[in-house]
Length: 204
Image 1 (spheres, rainbow, N blue to C red):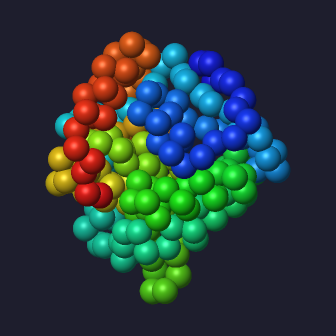
Image 2: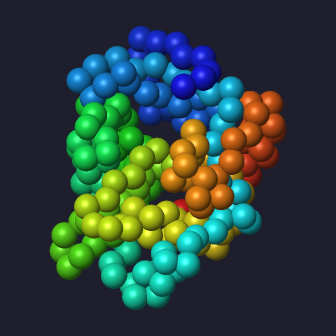
């Protein structure tokens, strides 16, 4: 993880939004660590909304509509799912302070979820922060095959429809690159971010 990181004595929801507006985001070393630190990567992951693409197999799955997709109906359950250990992710960085801060942002209209439901069971989802015309993806989880991928597709469709201009993924992974994610240098990212933050705050 290349970039700068600095610990802060106290992070409030308003300070958190200010941090996002200038390219910082918080993390913890582990879910058990009560402290948070700011991260500012030298290379920033984004998914260009005009270059998002999916595989043929996922497109085929999407046509079957295996899940009921909902928005902002179970924020705390989604963040709990993201914080839970998984076979490919035995530990996470989502601690109690992160949960509390983002739940408050949700109440303020700045944190949102995309959820995959199977009947009345939450089987996948993602959450992130919206500010101006930017959406900052935070984490996702899946308890069924392709559930989080399908949530990502619906997120992109929603952002495009609502006029968002920036989808920030913080970092890139091979998984995200398969959807079109790229790394952009810090200076270029800052210009993209400034344009998005200058926009009126868009409805998610």
